[in-house]
Image (cartoon, rainbow, N blue to C red):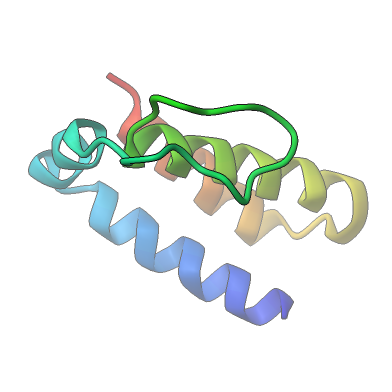
Length: 84
């Protein structure tokens, strides 16, 4: 499970290095919100906002349990690429 998180983070990091991808994910609205996300009501969010939220949750879980430096670096770098 942890190996998949590292792999997916690496793929997201490579995609987020493209400026058009980073702009594009923030332009895609999620119709109907995110009903499966139970911690907060997200009626009007974008794919980019959801991606940032998930990456922050991965960072928090990694700091709490796994403490994998590679996963942490990949998440932070992806967040930096997605920042406006």
